[in-house]
Length: 88
Image 1 (cartoon, rainbow, N blue to C red):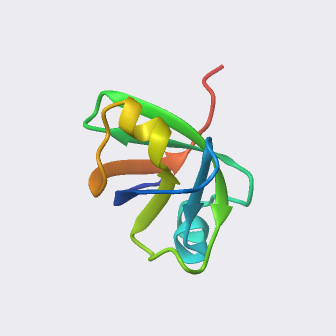
Image 2: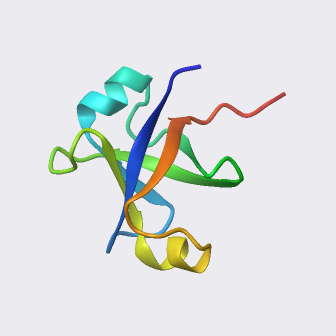
């Protein structure tokens, strides 16, 4: 399974959407509108729909500010990102 440690930045974007750089998406085998999993501090798991955005720096993911703050995740947190594959 391909995964990468990146920074999470909280932005004003729609809930359940995540913006990633196209190069990072290609590297991790993530296509547009695939579901991704963000794991913060090995405990908190979040699921988002991936969208490519060339303005997003390569080692960052941008997610909704409101939903992350209510879950206790702060801006500039480190997380692991990977393509979500449901277990059978």
